Length: 296
Image (cartoon, rainbow, N blue to C red):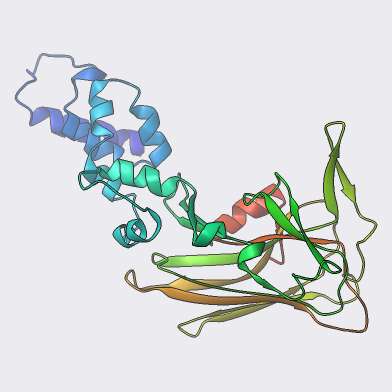
């Protein structure tokens, strides 16, 4: 179907271009750049970049503004103003897409925002330092540990506590779509010995007695909740908190979220808290396929 469509479209373009005679047999380099741009506009960004290496016509077409305008979120100008500090006036749409795909840091390094390169979907991560964690300043309970296993290069490690509660809040101009919110957690503290990853699980306790409760609220009245028992040490999991939808491309969505286990009949410990992540909901299947998803 796609190949037939492409062939037909190229034929139509060539038949309307006076530079080709009816007897000519054009090669890839002979196709008009405008025709190439019209075709590659139907492809995903990585495919467009690969085709740009074929020849001059494809390379020129891959920079067409109208091709990349269709890949950018509908509110991309609001996103640019929010997360990119300086943008030249003559910056093309492909360069704007590329800059938004970089991991852009906000609010003193506690938040990171980027576009997924393949889909153009907005993704966000909020570090443990950007969340309100009960007892976080008391070293009897929590410690901040440097690690290369976090995109923030630091995690919060819980040694032991009775009242476990983590709250967060974010307000951001998410483009229209459906989004899923996750806590990225691990039972057990990881370290390296002779190049091998070692998990210290001796402090893990209290999580199998009662599940952790996740809750999510949005400024337009959406609410989601889930519960999950933490019981698999040594691996980072995304614990699905819930979903929310955005319809207005010009609105800012305010999100409040929480994770609690406040049964004070027992202590809890041995948990690593990395971040909260917000992905387009279609990403849940990616996480599930990779074995990183919990509470689905």
